[in-house]
Length: 292
Ligand SMILES: [Zn+2]
Image 1 (cartoon, helix red, strand yellow):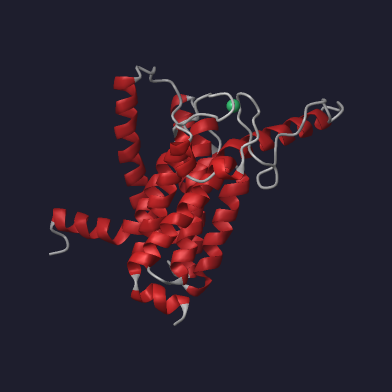
Image 2 (cartoon, protein in one colour; image 1 turned 135 degrees about the vertical axis):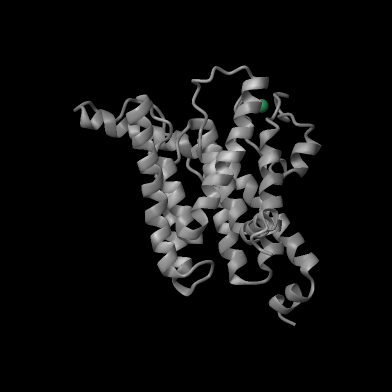
């Protein structure tokens, strides 16, 4: 019996295996979320100095790369050994502390691992033993990295949003999630819609409400799902954004002028529409009696 037959006949094993893969990938995403913005900043600073005619090298060491260089404790520099780097398990066994200096390890690391694993398991459950699951997992993992990097830095790196956009167009060459025609239009409409809102908002209020990274992210979502998904993504992201914004105002007393990144809401709404789009539409139609 081939693996494909085995997993098709035992969906529990399939979803469980993808869940475990999700934990491992989540562990890697923690590294990407932490290191990629630092790498980009380092290179931007070099380019800026070059542009201004200064020596590009200002003497600082480049931040570690994403794959080759091992992790260290940010407090004491303790080299994290492989058995201290097992997703979830190590965090529990170490009691959430560095084994050398006892500094607390942020709860966000295991949280990102579990979160990634849960989303991965849901994709496997939804799409089954198909190529769509493989594509859907890549889509999901990119969105997790984008959402957390935007949350931390208010930036969505082009190195993530643009490959996501091309990826969406490529997987739809054979109509995996949408006809290629709808995907191409979706990419263009996604970008232009937010570009238009951005400039209208700026014209009226003189403020910049979001960034170009958000336009590229919605373009990417349009490429994966086709232009028809864009109204739902906008609607869902506004609802989620409004709910979280109100919570932040109540509990953190943040002043209303403080920028809240839009990318995590777009990414969250995009993922929901990707996995549950048909169910959400059916539910909406039932509510309004349109499906009757
Ligand atoms: Zn330490």
